[in-house]
Image (cartoon, rainbow, N blue to C red; front, top):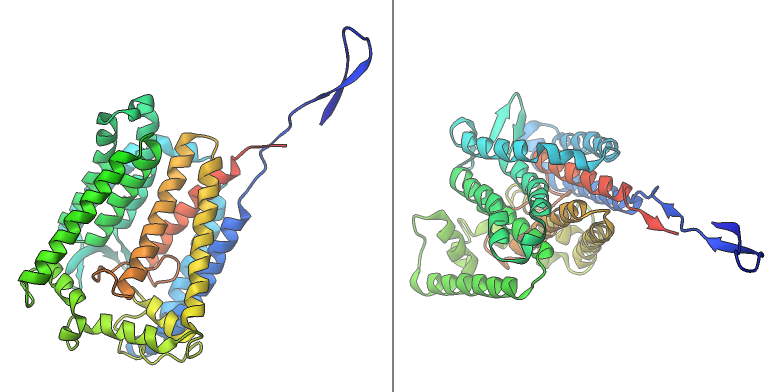
Length: 393
């Protein structure tokens, strides 16, 4: 946009450029890729769960209908909530943190036990997992804390203090819910947000190297000193991971059957709905192991397409984080991106037996109402940040 002005010296009219700011942006690309992931997930969920749902509930649409209803309702909710200014959440971050702490402790005593762990509150057919709320809490609380600390984040004391909320929630998740995978994800989100906020890279490289070295040494010790299963179920997972064929009739069955499903799919797969491993060979395939059925039915090609959708989703989140109007919004979206990236990578790693089985769902694809609800909340926050991006024309 230009404006005619009169030059004071020459008396002639000249054109002066005026910078126009455009603030009507909304990341429809992010919304579109989320919708695609949900639709893909629902198709694969029905294909994977129809047989077991028919046997267990007498309705092959049982899992599909529940997931579709939750996904549809909260997708619409996410679009509506994204219209609200995300800065309002700063006023509730402390309350959210304290609520997460209380719920993580309370679930130990008031929660419902399932598969040997007490991780859920259940009420009239509805279930809620406090660990999912803890992930969202870190994403909201930590950026606010870092912004308040300001320039002191350049040192080493402030980052340590900033990490404490994430460490507390991670430890509580591990101790009171025995959910190692969620504890690891919370810790991972914490470290990535602090890494992005901190101006120095080397301390994090050293810490990451030390952590990998310690894990490697521990796995080496287990591999050479534990020849059979022990009383500790986490150690057992490592033992089974190192040699699943030895425990093919027991704890190694799920992993082996998942690998058979992946291997039998080839490049283009057996065709949608034609999996044989989902007919009981892979227990609860619609949950943690749904990626193996995707590989069996759609092959490497289908799995690759799904991976590209996740990559594009992460790219859109990175774009929003880089262009966010302030540090708070940028770090918040960074935490969302970290959460989804960690969960996708760990799920695929578990299914392919790259790491021990940890029970991690595949975002937007695996069956699970609580996971969908909080993922949609995170997408709503990312869209809210995108709505306030200002570009200069």
